[in-house]
Length: 283
Ligand SMILES: [Zn+2]
Ligand SMILES: [Zn+2]
Image 1 (cartoon, rainbow, N blue to C red):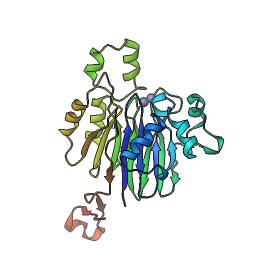
Image 2 (cartoon, rainbow, N blue to C red):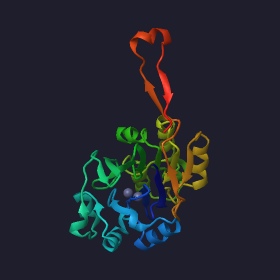
Image 3 (cartoon, rainbow, N blue to C red):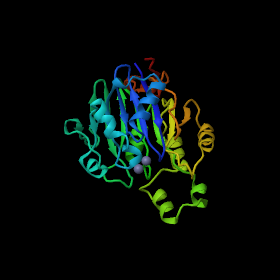
Image 4 (cartoon, rainbow, N blue to C red):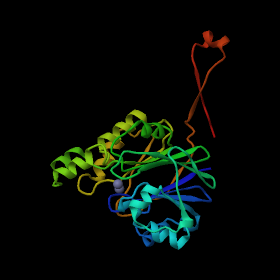
């Protein structure tokens, strides 16, 4: 019982994230061409026939550019809200169009996908949590800030694709025009390394095994910088920086043996033990 995950590409030049169990999978976003998706999945020995649905987070080109061809070629159902579809200006066959509602899980075989609204300068933007047998993987990129919803879902994740878009200093001192700098860091744009790290430090659950830092800016960030920044605080979590040029390897996400459950003791023995006992669940 595991989820297998990979970033097929991550960044402002295209995003596509794969999450699947041993039978079926979903893609979140298709911002690279259908041909590249096919090629990169083949490199990883992931059969495209396993992909049962495509979820679209928002209408920016780096999240949708391959969606129409992929859907048409493989008769792939596309989960996209009507507002996003309208602004995306892509053609998805009516029979393959599906919508979703915030915080209501969509079931795809043995996988469930829960969308939740995010702050981003798009029409109707969403992040997702993908779940199979209690194993949860977050796909949280293109967020202007860490809101309560992000914290709520991040705290449940065994693995997470989390945006770490820019280094404050590099953005400030870089060549972007001021309006673009404001757009990026203004609360409806992208998440900085510092903001991502703060989320990780404050809210990382003890059972999170993989953090995939995603959607790094080409001009305002540096993969080594992000890797080093998070590695210092990683403890038992694997830190991976998703590339804007190629697929990552496939990571296997299982339930950690270090997950704990708090068991309340019956009142009668509480004064003796005077504590709650944490039992390790080996599953
Ligand atoms: Zn994007
Ligand atoms: Zn975007």
